Picture 1 (tube, rainbow, N blue to C red):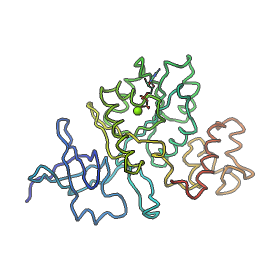
Picture 2 (cartoon, rainbow, N blue to C red):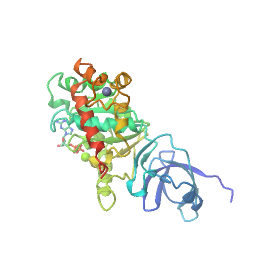
Picture 3 (cartoon, rainbow, N blue to C red):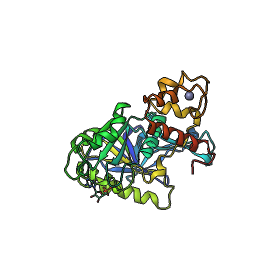
Picture 4 (cartoon, rainbow, N blue to C red):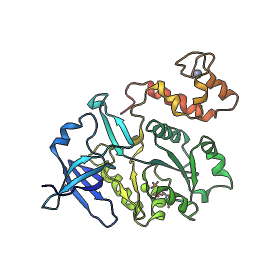
Length: 312
Ligand SMILES: Nc1nc2c(ncn2[C@@H]2O[C@H](COP(=O)(O)OP(=O)(O)O)[C@@H](O)[C@H]2O)c(=O)[nH]1
Ligand SMILES: [Mg+2]
Ligand SMILES: [Zn+2]
């Protein structure tokens, strides 16, 4: 048997079944198993996750068998305490970016949660895009006044309304051709925005979240949803989905871009920037060069990380 292997992307992983979608738009997904040789060779990390590019062989019964998993460019991962500290669980393979959706009103933006999400993106070296929705409910200039600080930090910020359609084209442009991890509190308009981008897309992603909540661990994203124009969206159900799985407190300052220039100037190496004298980070906060709210997020996260059972 020397037939050509087909290439595809894993769009769904469920109980040993991997649903693989070949590159072109019209192709169906093939229900694939995993070659036994592969199962043994990659013990230290998840063998196959949604988002993985694979090479597979078609079987006579219409199913398939994955022969090869291509190297991951990126991954959204968590360390799995149950499997030991070196074992990592891959939530999504090969994500291109994270898109964090918040509303400017209804509900009021939870910026500490956004800061936490941004740290997760930094840890995973994922470019982060912030989408500020419901701008139709805001006063003139209000969204920029609240979220402009994140633009200053270098993050891309989109201002949208699923109701008026403002900013929806820009959001579509950001999503097309990429694999995006989408997260945000409920009620901010994620489903509405996805439906505005492509009819039915929001519904498809929401159903995925619901299924995930049942019976399976809530942090697992078992499916990525294709966009008709190209690209994929992975919904991350629940807030725990983006917990800070594998960060040690000493690494947290590197996840705040505005702190990076100062850490080398602290009096003590390994300064926590919380209580030590001669801390250059706190001096920058006092001079107004670092936002007190962002610094507050840092301190709170650092306290959380110091607790031993923060991952559950
Ligand atoms: N005014 C306004 N309401 C919105 C907007 N986007 C969504 N909504 C409303 O906000 C509520 C929650 O939207 P939904 O898409 O379900 O949020 P999700 O939980 O993030 O998926 C619904 O009642 C929507 O109609 C928006 O841009 N402006
Ligand atoms: Mg929704
Ligand atoms: Zn310091």
